[in-house]
Image (cartoon, rainbow, N blue to C red; front, side, top):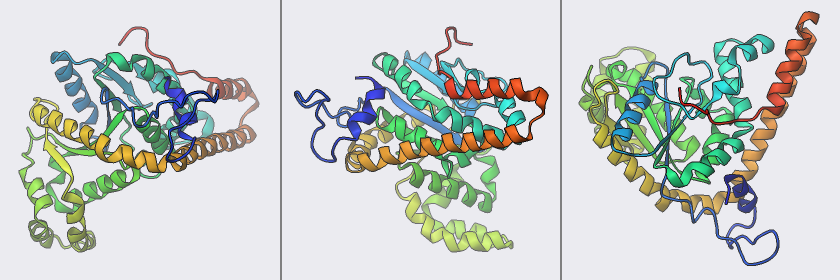
Length: 352
């Protein structure tokens, strides 16, 4: 069964096994049969957290263990990537052209590029479905603009599309050294909390850069809100006061949150991270698949609605850009419109 067929089956009924289009014997429920392998790891983290470096370290580690890896880059603005890429958004969407023709800044260009890519994400699923039987892990790198997964529709489209086809978990990468201040730590954890409840996927927090600063104090703050309160009491800002008031409520969030200390530079913590991933993958099948079975119709309708909204938003922006364009830019604008409406996502023939 191809990944593109999943949404059609998902739309049929909420409890009973879906029937085939021909009215013959009932088809096997794709949600119940989501394979335990490959495991999709979605890398999310703020700019500068070491997300792409950690991705590189993980690729090297898993390959040394003879694991079969498939990589996807979703950052349209990244210049160089140290690891080999199988699917690259940069091969499909020209980030600088999107900025130029829509009159956007860097962040807006990244968000718009990813939104456009997400409208054709079914093509990614088709490619993944062909490779899945021969893979152990699918690693997906994302932009540092984590608002993609907080409120942008593209993040939800991508997460939902992956989760109904593969065992999918989120890895949230945190810069340990920058969390030395309790206010910054709380800010990072609020982002993590927001992404967790937005995606509803099993979650692993990777405290990166433990070679620079050990992460033990962060785990103490997570396990004992009084220690975090003591650290916050030494801060005098309004944000610190707000963080103190939230610390007790956040303790409930920390109880079941997996966290490990890692170093993308030295490779420290890789074994702990792999164990956390294995536990999260098991949680996916015990907790998330039953949730999908209950929410299947609603999730697919929301996903399709989000895709339609992204297309309408693009057309609105394109029409506005056309009204403001110079006559000499007509050909460039028409080329961009054709590229975005008709683009096809493909694998790289040779890994860079």
